Length: 115
Image (tube, rainbow, N blue to C red; front, side, top):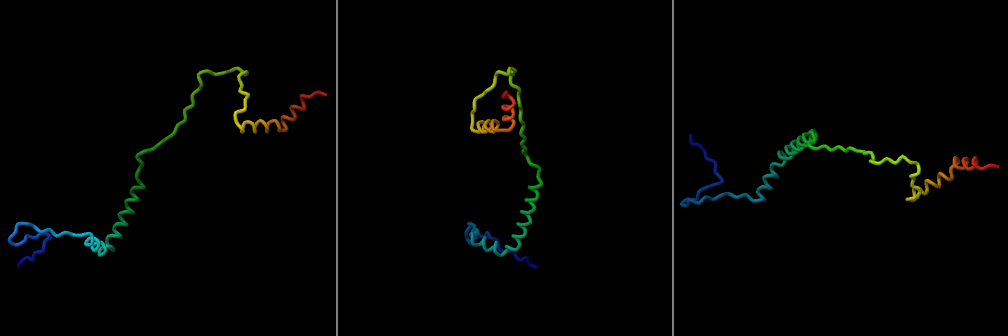
């Protein structure tokens, strides 16, 4: 029995020592993909779903945490005389107006008046 040889993409030209290499074009690769689409598509889908699951189960490499450090001031003011009485914003002004118009303030003013 003689063994049947398959033609190889590299062949020698008779009388020459140069090799002719069969070249594939993009069209050839497109045809190959189109013919084997029903094999490649499910395989790619299974592999991508598997990788997505594996990536989602992986432990994160980096983690961040925030802390708040509150330090005491070096000089503590204990006197009552140090009070800022100025109004610095519209919010403070509205707050003071609400306090002045409150019932508690009216009662204090009424109690402080003598007949």
